[in-house]
Length: 305
Image (cartoon, rainbow, N blue to C red; front, side, top):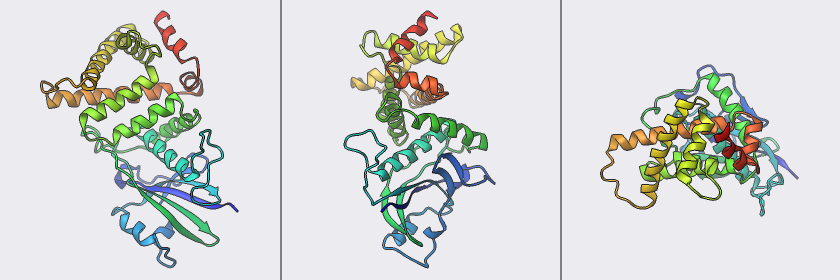
């Protein structure tokens, strides 16, 4: 018999979120930014994992990303999943929490993140903690580590997330989104840089691999810049960034790359990734092109407009 479940991730740091925000704020049906459930810190009824959960909560944590759903048990298959074998419904919830966090970062890069995901079930009148999963926290770059979200950023993230989850499981867009989230966890410059480029190649890379540097740079520039002169400038910037990606992949020595130069390259690439996702997810029609079989034709045709 299905019971009510709640999967949630306590968010930190707390000050990143807008003050006086009306909660819960829903990104989609059953998926919200909300206050930490009162039962988490209520010791009237304590399950076996509750003390561990309370210990893991960071000081000042007041909000969480939460997903409400029904399931028969921990590990029950998500019948909406198109994967074979199907994901557990709790795993789907965890992935969607990561995608909400990514949508917030795409709306405005901040240090907002989480380090645990909690799965709990409601047995009649009491909530029981069934599982606590530990995760790496996002590593924000110095240029946005102190940024704060606004209410308009949340509205933007809501639109980004809704378009993202409307795409197909294991599609080009979701693959790029998953890789981008993984990049944001990385502190090491080479791996973070390469992971961001994997996302860009998933979105814009030609399927046949011919003249990949030129075609990839051209596709990104023409997609993001309708103005010819700005597109030409962006083409050169993308091409230069991709050349560094190639040097890292092929193990060439990077000793001549100064720290401030590598940091600027990473900032530029992260801005490029954000602009790309915001363009791809701006509406259902564009997301559908990148998600379906017409992506190659669409990207190649931009050079003739």
